Structures are given as structure tokens and as C-alpha cells.
Length: 116
Ligand SMILES: [Cu+2]
Image 1 (cartoon, rainbow, N blue to C red):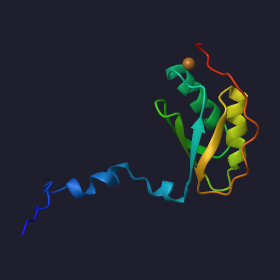
Image 2 (image 1 turned 120 degrees about the horizontal axis):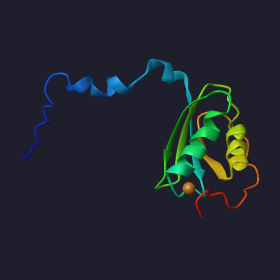
Image 3 (image 1 turned 180 degrees about the horizontal axis):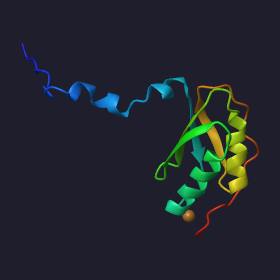
Image 4 (image 1 turned 30 degrees about the horizontal axis):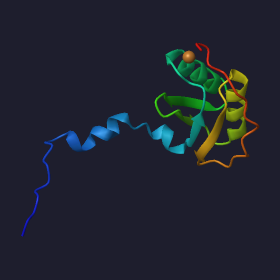
């Protein structure tokens, strides 16, 4: 029998994920968005700022390479306000996945990069 023993990370390692876990976040909605037009760190800051300005948004994480943005918001935050905030900032986006009910994304708008 071939068996691979479990890797022993030593004491303390098992709870390493807990250090990043904030119990308050367990009640947060997670919204995954796809944003177009981001090409640099400045774009990321614009998008982050636009989303954080939306009432109820607690945290914004932008992955520039994939154009994916995950937003953590308080329950009841209207997801369509996120897409309109993005449109207003010049970076059209749509909701890919949301734990909260969302309405369809508004019409997309082209353009938007600050550095092109
Ligand atoms: Cu840019």
C-alpha cells in the first residue's frame, strides 16, 4: 500500500487561517465583479476608491491581472450601485457572482483608463 503521511506543520500552524479571519466578516456579502479598463495601479486605486465610496462597502480587493474585483459589503448593499459607481468612474464592470440579490448590470460604457 502506498500511503503519503500527512504533512505535519507543527503546532500552531493549524490555526494560521484564523489570523486572517474576522468574525464580523462572516455576515458580509461577497460580490465578485469583472471590471474592464484597468491597466495600472492608478486604475486600481480609482476603482477601489469608487467602490469604497458606495454606502455599505467595507472592503475592496482588486486583482489587476484578471480584472476581477471582490467586494465585501454589508447586507442590504445594492449591488447595482456598485456597477453604477464603476460606470461613473469610467471602468465599466459587471457582477459575476454575488451572495446578495442583484439587479442586472447597467449598460456598459467604453474607455476609462487614466493612463492610455
Ligand atoms: Cu491606469
